[in-house]
Image (cartoon, rainbow over all chains, first blue to last red; front, side, top):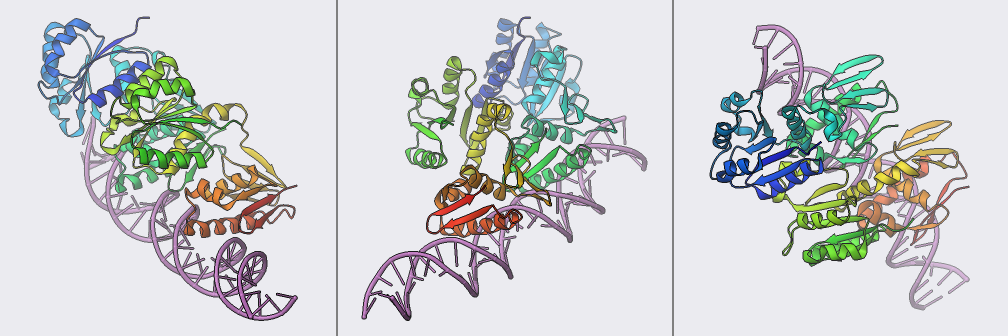
Length: 227
Length: 227
DNA sequence: TGGCATATGGATATATTATGTAAAAAGCTG
DNA sequence: CAGCTTTTTACATAATATATCCATATGCCA
């Protein structure tokens, strides 16, 4: 199967670099454009399968570019990237079959999920399985369900994301800062207490399997021990 | 086991010196390069187990070097070092199996955790057992548990790390200096008294087996005598 | 060699800080 | 508003750092 091509319009070069690398490493072809004014031109030249548009751009904002693109192509999926504060009803209004938006800060995981969604590709493309076996539990990352022979639980978003992070690094130390940055976008004092709360939750959810343990490394982070 | 080799690309000489010394004292072979432009050349010459790349470099930035390295080696773990201001929320999402990042200012403790994380993945899977038999005790390094027919105890991180160090050198002398550097990152006066406290703790934990003994070699260090 | 000064480490007490936990408050979403 | 998730708060507990006091080894010098 041909690699899906992504047009990515983003002015912050460093950010663009990172996201682009990450997407490429997952098998996408990425074309980065950092001047909004060239957005349409680039679109015509590349004819991508998905567009990723930053909303706040110096010369021309994401919505305008989207309009221009829509004028020549009414179906290509467009995903808007927006800072939390920029998410207004306007953005919401753009959400439709072919459009989506994602708020910063977002994890790569999230972004990938959106892209897959709009492309309507099966999960296998990125080889990130949606069902993980964690001890006696089955964790479905898509449905955010944690299944055990004796119980079934629906996880909230934060619970699910935290479990993902821990399990992706299972048997290794994950630092608090990293979790905080990934999940809350910063590691301030208040967020910090927040993490404790969710760790407690996960611990109680995972109690049914005595071999699963989230160990505290005080001052550093956690280690999720799994068989 | 061969010392893991680290390629460390950093332009600030003083910083490079400090970090490099510290890593060396913890058993790593460190090759420092302070010109980004020589990064790839150095990589080919050294063939390191891990790369530590500063992002902001005068001639060639860390990402570019990473690309060059990836072109010739797709698996070697790369850890990016970045100033706080350079880290957007998305940088965090960039974490993947073979890549990681760490924000300055970072503690040695943290850096070590990262390096061990990226290095350990292959090890853990293969042959490094997490359960050690120490006299009548079973010490699980992952779960930080110390089991004895008559008792079970959960160790804290420091307790566990200290026991690891002692047992890895059992029946040999371990110098105080080395322990202090490994566990506390330096061997100042205060840390020194700290070590005494943990030695005392371990001694009481290990009392149930009379054949286990942590012997003081005054002025030098300890010898953990085991059958 | 004996006696003293000094350095070093042992044990324990106390202080500090990080984290655990529960529960209330605030936000969301329909 | 009702039911959920998330954040915030408050208080409890555990891990770690520091301080204190004591014991003993070591070295020094008469």
